[in-house]
Length: 635
Image (cartoon, rainbow, N blue to C red; front, side, top):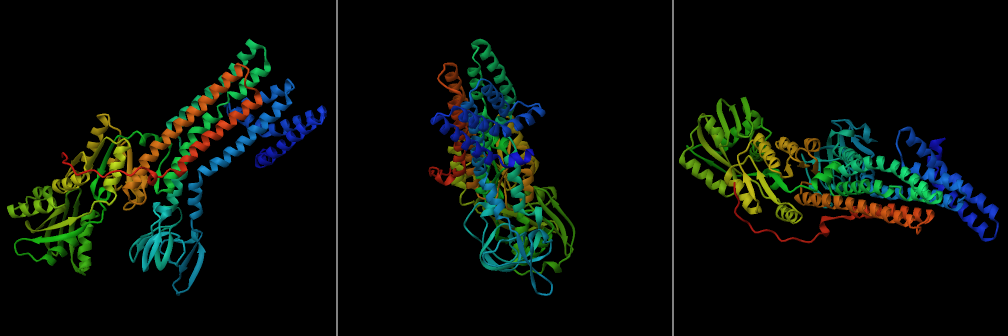
């Protein structure tokens, strides 16, 4: 019965409105009796869903707004104010209807995401025939076919073909990305042109797209500190209003005034103002490829004054390439590269994988080599025995720990390469330096603009922490105009530095790739991860995830956090201001029950409409900024 009434609440509202209009018509033609019947009927009809919610709240030992309106309506009926009792109930239900419709619009970004979810997949069977099946029936290892205009149903790797793919559902970027064999593709993205066959690697709720929807849903349900405070405040404020209305009656002996005071003091706009800002802000972030995990994160993010960055994959593109192979002792370049690449096959480090890729690009047969006793040394390099040759590849610290001396020629060459922006990997074979492999990465195209924009929005200090050598780190830091950089750090060193910043009073956001930097990301006040290159760990560890790996998304997220917090404060100010003005008007006799209720409901809509501005908030509409000149920085 209760569910049936709630389901037809809109029809009840409309019927109550018709009865009120009928009552006014009867009054206009002089039939007072029919007028009262129509208005009383409208009051009773519209009161049913309000009374139900009030009773449900009382069972939960909560004083709700519905309870205040219910008391006021009963009082108005008691004193014969049928016009006001009917209008108050109608306006309350109509306001609730408009509020729900508007709130639904603030969740439009999430709804758009859900609508993008693929429903079917075309699977290529072993006999060469294709079969269209529901996406939930796809299993890992299935070979899936996608034609032009089709949605990619699961996460996986391209096995055949190439295509231009719109990844806006994942990254927020509308520019299509070119994909070829062995490239990763994600569920929910759209194949603009081309043809691909892919192997399903993540299906169902494990896909990146499904996780994005889950995270956004959870974030929109979570509450900021302001919301939590307002919830507690409402639990105290609402019963206090009942007490104050009783006091007003005791002093004035005017039941009508007391009832009006009761209705006008309802904290509707105050209660809804903060959540709707939070929902709209998080929805905007999701639409722009930024996952912000809740209102409390949004609030804390807006207060950040210090940014800490990892270098590789964060400030740089994370796509390093071997730029040079320099040999000593008459060593052969190809032989040296092959030995090191085979050793690096057990490493997950990006520099090691770059060396493996360089060997594969030269069509080296790494599978034919024999590897034993391999060990990756975190933050330093790798040791292994390849074809009975002892290989040590890594930084100066590893060479020192292995008692491998560096000649002046090797040191001089390495320093020159590092000053040119390369990472120098020392290669020792059977205890002596046989070569140096230079690897370089490019600074992200949007890095300067994003960092400058964030400085103008309130960031006071920007620091880079990296495991790379000092010379390469200095080149990047100088190019970007950073305040500080610290090089040759292990993951635990980054954690300690972030802790020191927090202890000195800074509110710190740490940005990294979500894998090696996960401890520091978790330690910072706000952890931010680049979505690609470790998406699973990024989503689990970080508070904010940039799905397109673009630093301008970071700038957008920071600006959005500030705008959302500011919007929330505006709504609280509007709500409190309207209630204060109305209560003053009530006590001075200038505001009546129906007009006061109308203004009260209007204030609820005003705060919702104010929050809806966040849906259109876009970093691209912000003032362009000048890029900073490169300046010396301190290590």
